[in-house]
Amino acid sequence: MRIVLLGAPGSGKGTQAVKLKAELGLAHISTGDLLRAAVKAGTPLGLKAKAVMDAGQLVSNDLVLCMLEERLAQPDVGNGFILDGYPRNLAQCQALEDLLARIGQPLDVAVKLDVPNEVIVGRCEIRYKAEGRADDKPETVRERLRVYAEQTAPVAEHFADLGHLVVIDGVGELDVVFERILGVLRSPRA
Ligand code: B4P
Image 1 (spheres, protein in one colour):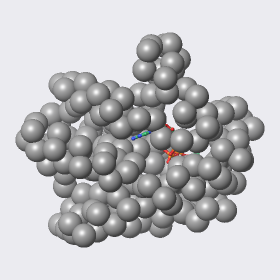
Image 2 (cartoon, protein in one colour; image 1 turned 90 degrees about the vertical axis):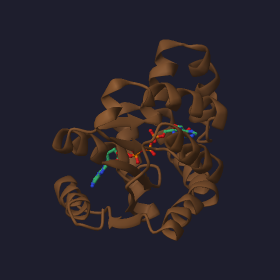
Image 3 (cartoon, protein in one colour; image 1 turned 180 degrees about the vertical axis):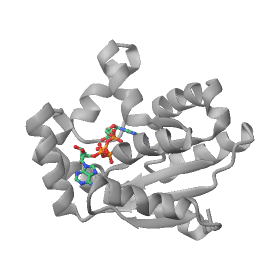
Image 4 (cartoon, rainbow, N blue to C red; image 1 turned 120 degrees about the vertical axis):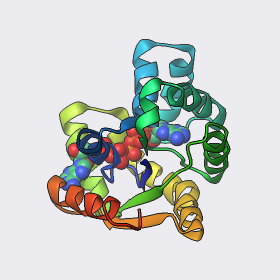
C-alpha cells in the first residue's frame, strides 16, 4: 500500500506514521525527519535547510525532491510506503506524481488528519517545552500554520478532486486516532 499522510504541522502525521509502519510493515518516509537528519549531520543540504525550517517556511522544492528521490530508491520502499510531510504544495504534488509514475508506484490513498489550529498550538507548545525544537516556538507555529493554509491546503483539495482523499478526525488519544486511520485503510475503498 502507498499512502500519503497530510495534515497541518503538529497534526500528528509523524506520530501516526510510526505506528502505521509497525502495524503494516511499510517504509516510513518523513521529509521532516530527513531534513532534520541532514541538519544534524551538517550536510550542504542541511546547512541550507536549517534557517528556513527554523523560520517556519518550506525548504526549496528542488532540495526536498532530490532527497525524496534518493529515499524512494531504497529497497524497503518496494513493500509500500507512508509518505509523511510531502507533498506540501502543488508543485511538489506534480513532482510526486511524475516521480511515482516513473518508478511504477502509484498512490493508493491520501489520508488527511484534521486538527483545529488551537489544538495544534497546544501540542507544539508542549513539545517545545519538552524538546526545544526551534520550529515549535509559538510564533513559528503560527507562521507554519499560515504557510500550511496558503500552500499545503490546496494539496488536499487536489487529492479530493482525484477521489483519493480520506479525512480523519485527528483529535483524541493517539490509539483512537490510529484505529480511525486503520479502519479507513482496511476498508475496500483504500
Ligand atoms: P515535519 O517534520 O513534517 O513536522 P510537523 O508537520 O510539525 O509534524 P507532524 O504533523 O508530523 O506532527 P507530529 O506527529 O510530530 O516538518 C518540519 C519542517 O520541515 C517544516 O516546517 C518544513 O520547514 C520542513 N519540511 C518538511 N517537509 C517538507 C517539504 N515537503 N517541503 C518543504 N519543507 C519541508 O506531532 C506533533 C506533536 O503533537 C508531537 O509532540 C506529538 O507527540 C503530539 N501529538 C500527536 N498526535 C497527538 C494526539 N492525538 N494527541 C495529543 N498529542 C499528539
